Length: 191
Image (cartoon, rainbow, N blue to C red; front, side, top):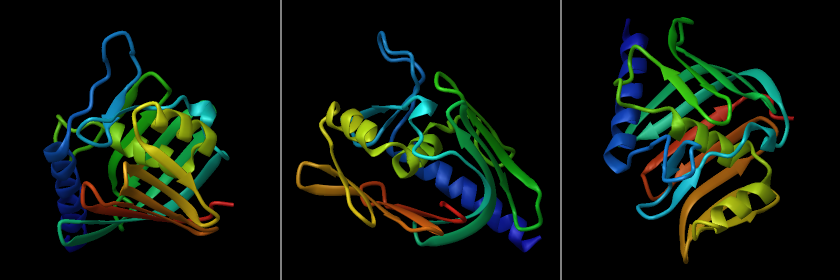
């Protein structure tokens, strides 16, 4: 029961944090792709699924830290050129939420997230970690952000300010969002 409460608290805190900082929408003028606000002035349109660096179909341990709280849960992730599907589960294997992205629409349902919470931010963080660096660079530079790829990860800057830092290895991917004050760690096989 305690781990179920921790899972629910994790999702509510994460969702509340995202909602406090910005809103996502599926339409913006002529552009109909979903987007998120990476900063208060930089609107990042989600990239098409064919821009994934390498397909994956595996389970991962998801850890998150937000507002002094640390949480863990399991995720089954299938991502390829057709889209992204993610099933989130607590430690007992109970379904905590499902996400699907097919390029023009994000579908996210969960009993623990508020109805107003969109899955666009989960997709955006996933794309920053696992999508083609050249495509990411172009998309981020078009909205005034700078993208840097290194041997051990990725970084996103707004001017001189580091806003997102991603560490990548064979078995671990860690995203730290310095601007929004949260971190996510995925553990699995990323080869």
